[in-house]
Each structure stands twice: as structure tokens, then as C-alpha cells.
Image 1 (cartoon, one colour):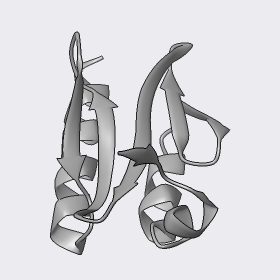
Image 2: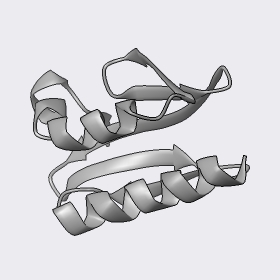
Image 3: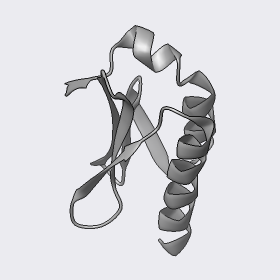
Length: 85
């Protein structure tokens, strides 16, 4: 599964805009977010859809983010993670 390219990331523009609202996250390159100087979230494109790898604990978790519902799930999990910090 390859990292999401520019065109694929454009399809996630509303999701990226919501992630950018989190002051705790730094977007070092488009679609690659860091939390406290460590990789936290990035995206992959695959024939099966768009996916996010997000580090909510010791390891990255892969979540599908092709639909609005899936994107909301990702945002909810990111929100809970950041609130706990």
C-alpha cells in the first residue's frame, strides 16, 4: 500500500482541514501529522480505498477513511487520544 499522493489527498481535503484545527498536531508535509515531534498520522491509497495510519498507542493502527462515516471515526479517535493527553 503506497503513501497517498497529492491527488488522493485532495479527496480528503475536508478531513485534513479538521485535523489541522488541532493545535497539538503539526503537519510537516501535506497529510503527514506529528504529535510532540513524533510521527502520528499519515495516509495511504489502495485499490480498496483510502486508509490512515494513526498512532493511538505504542503502534500505528490502520483505519479505512474512504467514507464520511469512516472519516468521522478517525476524527473521534484522534479527539479522544488528544483529550487524554
